[in-house]
Length: 220
Ligand SMILES: C[S@@+](CC[C@H](N)C(=O)[O-])C[C@H]1O[C@@H](n2cnc3c(N)ncnc32)[C@H](O)[C@@H]1O
Image 1 (tube, rainbow, N blue to C red):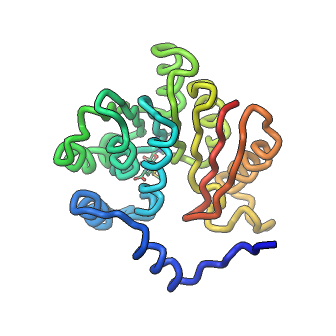
Image 2: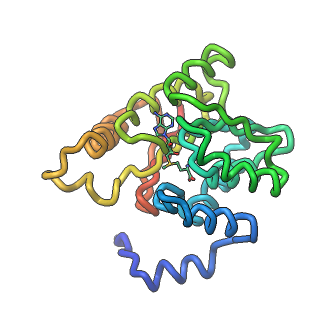
């Protein structure tokens, strides 16, 4: 039986060297984000952005919902992977950080495929359900405040079409999910969602131990 490999820093560098497709716009947005107070800690890894783009293509997605824009790196990766008439609806509680990314969306020519909604994510999702109806998205990516992940998952599942994909970031939460002493609200919410997902027969499931843990839930 094969074992799960434990990635060393050398191996992660190798993976990046042999698989990352990078360019000046993506690199520029990562570098500008690194100068912000929150830095790149909130941003998906470049490898994860590339995976998201691949998933958008695999899902044949035209409509993508993103919960948690920050400086719009994952937004840009997904928008690029859409057909010309596709849309990423991305939402954030503030327009301060998305404004940084908007410059890069424009420079890339992806801005016409990006619809930024500013406000509480749960309210935005309720608004989208009323506006577009259930099953109106091909793929949803959840990457915002962790304590509300359970709420976002349910709303995202309602908004995703059967056969569509819900992608959830940070589901290993820096390894804190397996620390019994860690009972803060964020860790608890992620642990509870992971346990719930393991027996949620509305979806097919995989938790990838990549980056900070990426869960793929395909709606049946
Ligand atoms: C981890 S960052 C998103 C990173 C982004 N996906 C990327 O890869 O660049 C989380 C974002 O969620 C936003 N956020 C936090 N709480 C929120 C809420 N209640 N509603 C909407 N957005 C929220 C934060 O402002 C932050 O920009």
